[in-house]
View 1 (cartoon, each protein chain N blue to C red):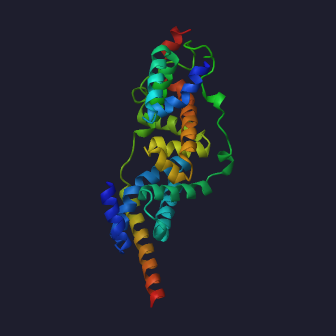
View 2 (cartoon, each protein chain N blue to C red; view 1 turned 90 degrees about the horizontal axis):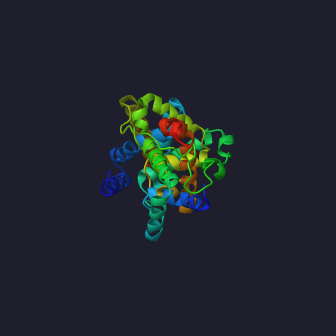
Amino acid sequence: MARDCKRMLSELSDYIDDELAEELCVELEKHLTDCPNCRVMLDSLTKTVRVYCSDKEERLPDALSAKLRAAVAKKWDDKDSKSRKSHE
Amino acid sequence: MSKETEQALIDSARDGDREAFWKLVEDAAPMALRLLTRLTGNKEQAEDLLSQTALKAVDGFEKFRGESRFSTWMMSIALNLARNEIRQSKSRKEINWDDVIPAGAHNHGSESADLVEWRDPQEVFEQKELRTLLDNALEELPLKYKTVFLLRDAEGFSTKETAKALGLSETAVKSRAVRARLALRKSLAPHFGRKEREAHGS
């Protein structure tokens, strides 16, 4: 890659995160207009991030959730009773 | 979960409300399980580590000062446990900058075999096949980059929250995120690049 493109790599990443300073955004967008390699790089980096974002299971399987809940409750109660004893 | 709801649950849990504490754990647990599964590559081990994470959260709840989200705090516990389980040899591997930027594209604007346009991964592969490809690419990533990528990109943490969960500076998170993304992009490029452009390219 040209030196200019190499320098843009970190900026492409910040650009994807919407964390690139405005003046650098303008510079990067101008560069992207002229550089097909960086356009492909931006698109493929964005797709890399996006493909890992998808497919999220938002709930635990019921059996695991029940097991975890029982373990947390037991630990909480044990800790609670120890704490009460130490205050007696 | 909104910050307000989370804060109300934290306050109740501090007053001894076990159910409120469980709701906090229940909210963060699916994310922790995804993270642990991807880090260990082993479902049973990940479930065991999740259980250890939740129990450590009960034990250390007094130490949680509310400077980060509860989920961030729980992720940092999960990550510490996972790090101890994972072979340390992997964490010592480094990503070489020159290895992950496309080769053969030294002239500005010229075409490179590694810089072909990508198809939409979800349209190219069946979900199960895609999952295997993604997991294999992640497996190659050194641990310190993998943890940043999983929190920052796969789970959508901000740079600041990722830094808090990992005990890193925001600059370090950004630098590791760039290398992780470039390394994964390179691993996935042979699968997602448009074959037709390769055939008709330079």
